Length: 584
Image (tube, rainbow, N blue to C red; front, side, top):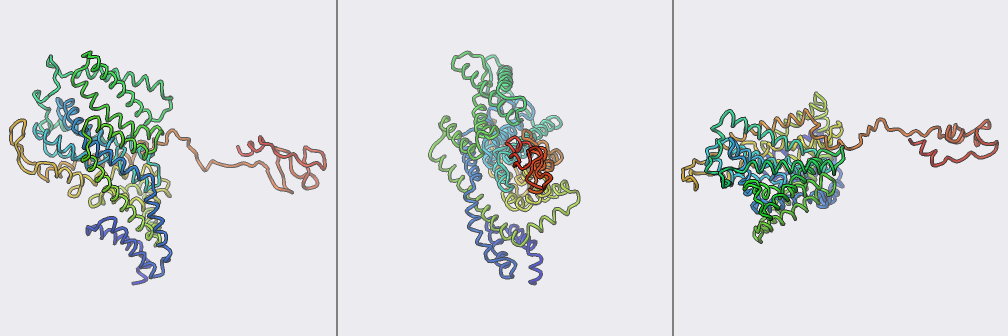
């Protein structure tokens, strides 16, 4: 038995962890208890030294002093303040009125608002609950298919996991030892590409199954002009003028080789500022040039866009670190709540309590993960995992495919925090040794981990939506008609198409890494194999000496002479220019 434990300590330790998690024990305590238990067993068997646990206090202190993790409470607090200050309601009402006249317009509005909430809050629960409370009754009122309605709300809420400032991206960057800013830049395009794929699916459903996603009736459209029009031409003109100003500003402010993220963020900032200024002038001067919908869209959507720039833009252009960006976002959210006159002591207390709870949850899991990894590495578990994964057929691609399948399967039982703290520390070092870009790996895992929120029956987004979806038939307060309840089965079935879309995005990121690795496109490419230091013929005494730089050390006498100097005279010392030439 002792020999068996010594030979297979690492796989037994990992299997015990999986068993504890499946039995429902808290993740943080399962990790820590498992690490301490097998550490004591290893010490008793002579496999580990008692000095191993002396490193524990240092590890715990390292977790607590990690400044990168300060971004977690900042972004969580920002998201909770925005969610409780009514930003989601205003966005959903406005965008819903804008796209409502189209088939599938309400569903498209939910996706777009979900992307905006993701870009400002980074919190799945806030997005799903807000959109479930506001959008789901409206979609049911006008006859949307229940599976489509619930699926689009749950999927749009999970965009908070891949669109910066995502909490999972912060954790992944920390676990992989990479910059949070680089992780944000790498996830930028995949996040919005996934948003576009959701919209395309809704458009396809509206085309081929029009009854599943009807347009809202004319009487439900609230922004109507005195002449009976809906004011869309006025909005289009305002947007066209803003785009022209944005294009001119980008050409003037940025160089031709500007990074794609910097280009997008700067363009959106100038476009939003131009539209907002024109709308303010129209309102203050009472020009009457803009329609109601144009003014509403401008005044509701521009402040969140400004907050997005405050958070993400300053990170992308290098003005602020992610932690500083999170702090600015938290302050910006408080200012927006004050402007809307919705900030009070109760709201502030709720946001702070929830932020503290989530932050403690993350830190406790991270401490447990540190205890587990200390013992796991002590019993050579990292080497066991490395040999297990590097021996897979297919090289890098085989490794990434197996990791993606493993992550997808584990997501049925574990949420993204558990996956990030358990799986990533094991596969990260192996991927690094194989030469895989860890930002690419992190974004690939982040897209894959989104499915953990959508998996029936344990997906958290499904639970959040179930908590706010009607459990009994009810009478609609607008139409007076009886609306049937939403069943748990409808929520589960509605998530399946969006899980498939997320898996398609995983394949896209896997096959086309350039949509992630563009984050380093503006950096000089250095091939370390081509780096060499040529010292010329800078030899020692008695050998060939400075060579072509100062003549040769050693003449006929065998040392001390200089071919270019009179006999018996010391050779000239190399100048600064000579040294520069030697190390070119």
